[in-house]
Length: 280
Image 1 (cartoon, rainbow, N blue to C red):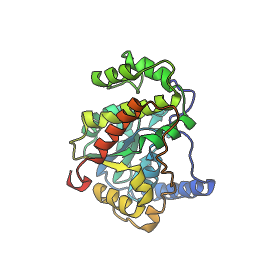
Image 2: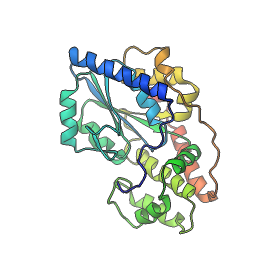
Image 3: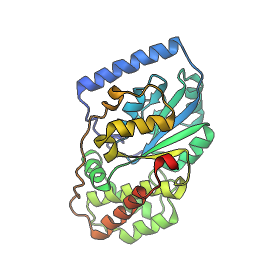
Image 4: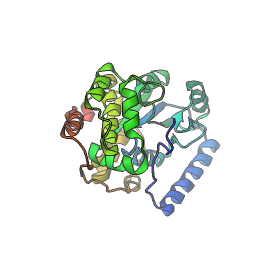
């Protein structure tokens, strides 16, 4: 990756919360090494950066049967990109827990391949309203408009353009303008990363969409549904209480042209129109 800023953005959790969760991970890791159990399945947590994947990783890490790898873990990631499959296989082979959980943000175009390689597997794809996602992204990252220009010309040299369809490139070219705002570029990135779901995964029963807004507004219901989907035991109130954020504003960023907003609104509507996750 060639960004000056990291791909994760700011961690909004308090220091006390981070220390408490770190202590839990250390204790859980010690117990799992002491009494290892056979691996049963793999879970990939996917979605656009700044969409709430850290929240979801926290509630999955709260399970005693998971081993969780964030994109900041050098064992599994190099500059926030997942290491080669052979490296991940070695981590899987050493996993002392029944459920191996790993982030896959820069790998959205490879979710199918990853699930086919690591079987059995499931994916949680987090979707956040594009307005709040763009507002958050421009506080953490930059360079959105130059990336937009590069990608519409067919550059696939890094994860942003990898797997991008010709139809998406055409849309990027039609909407591009040199004086576009960074917020507009962030909205376009939300679009071209999330459209991969419908191009590759929409009918896959191994994949569940998790809406950020529902997660933070109804944590008991949504976290329970995630645990049920993954067949994780031990769900309780304290696990749902790990959801700490309430940032749901739906406030449009400045300088967004109507046609860009309409493109993102249409894609968001497609996500919201998906059949009930329990029936997929």
